[in-house]
Amino acid sequence: MHHVSLNRGDLNDARSGRVPPGAVLGSDAAGVVSQPAADGSGPEVGTRVVAMARGAFADRAAVEVDALAEVPRSVDLSEAAALPVAGLAALRALRAAGPLLGRRVLITGASGGVGQFAVQLAARAGAYVIASVGSAARGEGLATKGADQVVVGLEGLDQPVDVVLDNVGGAQMVAAWELLATGGNLQSIGWASGEQAVFPPYSTVGPPKTLSSFLNEGEAGADLATLVRFVADRSLCVEIGWRGSWERIAEAVEVLRSRRLNGKAVLDVRPLAPIAPTRACVNPASAAP
Ligand SMILES: NC(=O)c1ccc[n+]([C@@H]2O[C@H](COP(=O)([O-])OP(=O)(O)OC[C@H]3O[C@@H](n4cnc5c(N)ncnc54)[C@H](OP(=O)(O)O)[C@@H]3O)[C@@H](O)[C@H]2O)c1
Image (cartoon, rainbow, N blue to C red; front, side, top):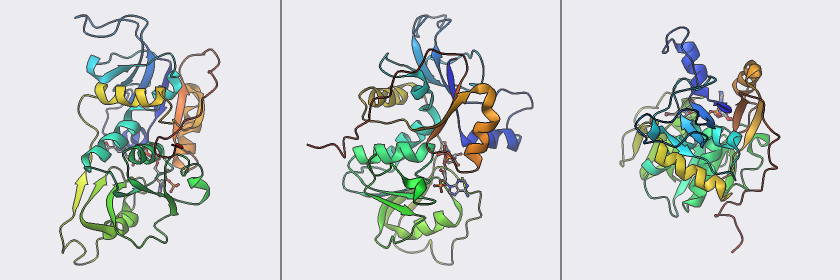
């Protein structure tokens, strides 16, 4: 393992008792193959890979071959480590919401790990992207990543939206539901607010629209390869808002919990050569013709 990245789900797992005491947490891993699959189906020793792997917060992890993707030299492994849980959630929730060309897509919690990827992927799919954040400062940089509109909470939004990707839950999710157009779909990805959601009487009665629960499931490899390809051609930008040694994980957790993290926190598992300077990302949706 060279790098791992932190997800809000890791905090939930640690607190919820869903994992047995002493279990190794973590899902996002990037590193180098030290032992290939016995049946020869996976990449060979020395291949740079990214994986969605249970127990990623480790020096080494055994990973299913179809849960990983190769990482070309042009992509830093620290960037790759940020992709699995958040990048896949963004990609798959957008795909589950249906065709996006010309659709109005509202993304809540857009400053976070899932949100930053979702804004860029929705824009490249041709959506009109509305990024909802907690404050103007939290929305910095989202317009250049493809957001057509950056709003604080849902302030000023009165036109219906066709799709909602909801990362926040609670009262904001209920308000987003009320903005949803007939035939629209809300993908409930996460509940970062932890707040109760109360639907007013009759708010779920009327012209049909759907709320879908979302779970990142299924083999990760092919979709991870897609994300890696986008990063390699710099059409997908990986926002790393915090980076440091794995020994400073408590600091990274605090930054995430206190809503001071833009994008992802990436932890270095072993000392590494200096990172190559990051090349600018150009979202195809905002690139000049
Ligand atoms: N279903 C799945 O398979 C799946 C997969 C991945 C993630 N998730 C879940 O999806 C959610 C988003 O994940 P993420 O990685 O993007 O998390 P994150 O990086 O922590 O981002 C969440 C965002 O929610 C916003 N937020 C609004 N109210 C908040 C509150 N009261 N407390 C904390 N944050 C608040 C924050 O933005 P502002 O500060 O700008 O408001 C924050 O940037 C999490 O709940 C995560 O567990 C689920």
